[in-house]
Image (cartoon, rainbow, N blue to C red; front, top):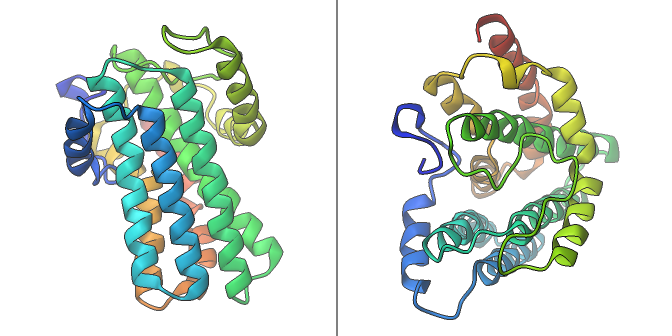
Length: 254
């Protein structure tokens, strides 16, 4: 958890790929590869995973989903060690994530007996889970002088950082708001006072980190290799009930 000071670092269960991601980033440090190149690589990995799900190659699908999670961490690591943070990369990363998530759930709907309504609820639940985790995590990062490339409230396009074009930031921010805006608003309205409350304890952030995309993809991978693909959509519908549990704990005690 390098984005937080030591006292507030928690065990991020969605960040299991970080050690390998650091190795990848270290090996790319002196190359011409950019963080955005790595982001595009995780998009390719995610697309291969979707193809493998369609073909029934579930072990391969699991591998590429987990590899996608590792690369998802590697792009940020590479940006840090090359000292090239960018809003272009930040928004491209998020936009790529939600589009890949959509196609994963679209594929699961196609292959299972799940209804369209259940699939939409499951996909939205997955996104709300991730939004809640990111909401609380970004509040911590902003409060304790961590990485502030992500903001608690993404209301306006940020000013481009050195090395990136404002036009690219504006376009990607517009797409980001279009895809994530409703989820951000829902979570904010469910817990408007989170940014003024007490810092969440490490144990609670660890529990909430199970809502992180890396852990979500790990769950999907496990269901696939266990031959339980029919349960993925209903699982995430039920799992979303914990959103209200975590928010209630935050409001009552922190």
